[in-house]
Length: 331
Image 1 (cartoon, rainbow, N blue to C red):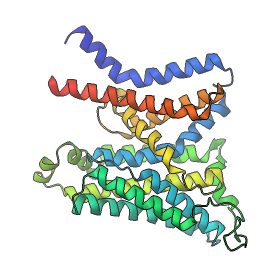
Image 2 (cartoon, rainbow, N blue to C red; image 1 turned 60 degrees about the horizontal axis):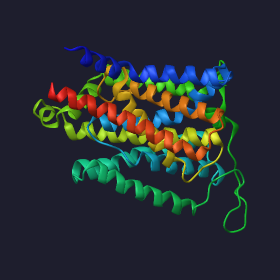
Image 3 (cartoon, helix red, strand yellow; image 1 turned 120 degrees about the vertical axis):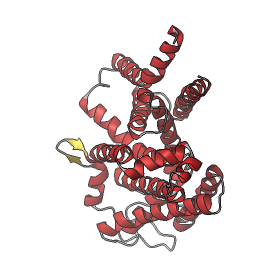
Image 4 (cartoon, rainbow, N blue to C red; image 1 turned 180 degrees about the horizontal axis):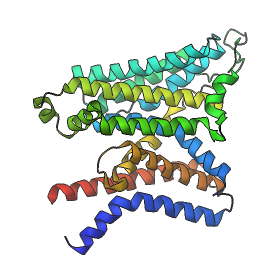
């Protein structure tokens, strides 16, 4: 192996972590408050929602698919969560359970189109994305949901967000934001699931070579269905957390979050040289995006310029991933 190859492998393995460290050092030099505990907690809290969505996208990527409907699922579950409290004053258990069931249904719909009807993943989830987008805008008549909002018939909505629900997105436990604890717990559980359980290993085998997986006795269709259901559930958790974080239901909440989640997944391919979708890499990808956006906000960069940064991160992650895969196939 020549020196250039060794350097490229080293950069691929540790490049994302070096970029995260470099970005933190630069922003720390530019703003003395960047490394404060409160700001670090804000970064982790801000990436918690993206991380949940990205974990779902990671599951679909592991089985060699792609879930474009994750963003719309976030928007739908966000407004459903909000309306359950503001419009119908339902108990907390129903407010948390029904959006998760919606995530399961979206996952099953994706699986039906992809596994049974055999529509390509991108096209199927693209269609579902538009369907869900139309459903939640029709359901809310295009309005965002907030406490005691004005209804179209001139009355006021009877309910409002409860303090117990808002604690999930805004509260702290032992000084640590609750969404951060939920995110860390989810990353650990999913890593254990993917690495040490039969279902997790079957997902990777299915994604690596579907025909070989089928010949080895793996129920490929069932594994792919599970991946899309998990993707829908994690997107739903992201929607619940979003409502709890901002205290309202926003009809377009999921659209910008989808691109951040996809970028996090592809950055994660290269973390520690994994070369495949993995939840630890996805977490560090989300950290990179969160640090960049937070630092640029502290530098007063216009918010509309952030999409340029997100797009650039996605392009860099895609370039690194596909260059590495191309080199590995040719070696």
